[in-house]
Amino acid sequence: MSRWLATTLLLTASQVASPAAADERAFEAALSDFRNLHRAEMRRSGIVGSSLYVVRDGSTVVADHLGEQDAEAHVPVDAQTIYHWASITKTMTGIAIMQLRDRGLLTLDDPIVRYVPELAGVHNPFGDTSAITLRHLMSHSAGFGGATWPWRDHDWQPFEPKGWPQLAAMLPYTEVKFRPGTRFSYSNPGIVYLGQVIERLSGEDFEVYVDKNILKPLGMHASYFDRTPPYLLRHRSHSYYIRKGKHVAAPFDVDTGVTVSNGGLNAPMPDMAKYMAFLLGDPGRQPEYDLVLKQSSLAEMWGPQIAAGDDFTQGRMAETTQSGLSFFIDRGTAVRFVGHNGDQNGFRAYLSLCPDQRAGSLLAFNTETRGVQNSAANRTTAESRIALATDSLCEALAKP
Image (cartoon, rainbow, N blue to C red; front, side):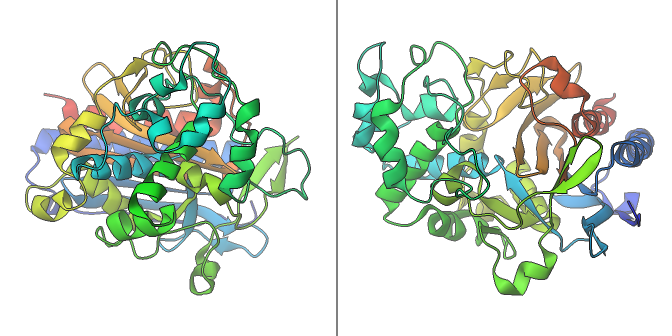
C-alpha cells in the first residue's frame, strides 16, 4: 500500500458510563493489543482499508480508520467512508418481519406460501411446501440452497437478478434440500422470500420500507441501498480482491437487484454505530427505540433456534454457533455473542454484540484476502483473525 493512514479516537474514561477502574484498565489493555493485531494483519495481508467502531452504553468509545478507501487515488478511509455491509442487511430484514409481526400483520409460524404463493411451485420431496414457515426462513432451516442466482458466470451479466419475475421463473427448478426445521443451511434466497413478504404486506419497496421504519427513525441519514446517490459518491469505498498476491478491483457501486433484502445495505461507520446502539438498548432512549422494535422482540430474535455449527461462514465461525432469528449466537467462556457477518464484492463486514456487557463492535474491510469457504480454514483469513480478536474487548469487560 503506497500510503498508510490511521485516524483513531478513544474517548476518555470519564465519558464512559461509570465503569470500574479495573474494568477500564483491562479494556484499554485489550484494545491496545487488538489495535496492534489489526494493523499488523492489514500490513501482512495487503488489506487496503478497514474501520473499527466500539459502542458501549449507547456511545461510540472507539473509532479507528486505517488505510485507503480508494487505492488508486489514495483517498484515506475516514468517518464518512461508506462501506457495503452485505449480509448484515439480513438483520434489518428480520427486524422488519418482527415489526410486521408486532403490528399484528403476520405470525412467525405462518407458511411462506400464504404471502408468496409462487413458492408452491418448488420441488419439495419432503411434502407440502406450506410446512415452510417464516421462522424457518429467518433461522435458515427451511431447506433452500445458498446461492440466489447460481447461473452468473460472466462479468457482463447483471451482478444479481434485477427483479422478482426472474426468480419466480426459476422456482419450478428449485429444490427443497431437507425437511424444513431439521437442520441449518445458510440460504440467501430464503431471505429474498422474506423481502417479498415485507413488500407485499406493506405495499412498499423493501428499500422504502426499511428507510421509513429503521434507517430514518435511527438517524441513519447517510445509509442507503444499492446505487450511491451522487452527493455521497465521493465517500463510497472501492473494494478489492487479493488474487495471486495482487490487488484486483471489484466492480464499483453495484446494484443487488431483487436480492436487496439479502445484502444491499451501504452505510458509513457512524450510522452503523447508531444501529448498534439501538440493538444494545439504552434506558434513556428506550421509548424512541421501541418505536422501531421493542427490546423484548430483539431478545426473541437472539434466542437459539437451531444449531449452525456445521457452517463456518457466520457468527464466530465455530462448532458452537447457533442460529437465532436473523442473528447468530455464540457463547464464550464469560460472554454471550450475538451478531452477523457479511461478505460480497470484495467487502467483509462483522457486527458483534455483547448484550450482557452493553457493548459491541463493528468491523469493516474493503478487501477480501481469500474467498469464503465453509470450513474451519475460514477462521484463518486475515479478516477472520481480526474479527475474532474483537472478542477480547467484551471479555475484558466481563472480568470480575
